[in-house]
Image (cartoon, rainbow, N blue to C red):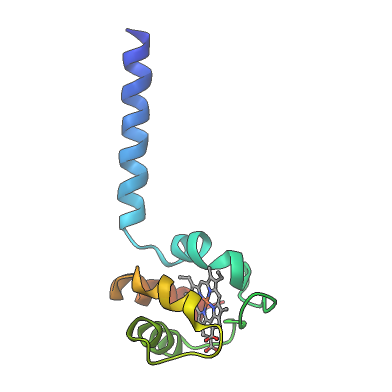
Length: 101
Ligand code: HEC
């Protein structure tokens, strides 16, 4: 009995997490997918180029370009793979967040 309750609670928590992830919140996306290389404030440049200071539109142009393989420099393969997994909605959401960093 007790076990069932725990399992149901876990299933609910997982379902909730999945729904939240689908909601494409820019900050959540950035924290999960971008922060490790670009840094919490977008200034990290050891692994990548800093994204702080980019306008949201410029981020969209870059990300859509990586997705279409028409943008980028010598290290673009990483970003091409990432962008390929993102919908245009996700890109817009994360770009809006970066635009405000
Ligand atoms: C594994 C490390 C890594 C992760 C994770 C990562 N990036 Fe990058 N990013 C890079 C590298 C490396 C470059 C430079 C690529 C090149 O040579 O074009 C870059 C470049 C960029 C640029 C272009 C900057 C410019 O000045 O042209 C943007 C925009 C960008 N990343 C956004 C993002 C976003 C948004 C995410 C999360 C969805 C993300 N990155 C996740 C490594 C990463």
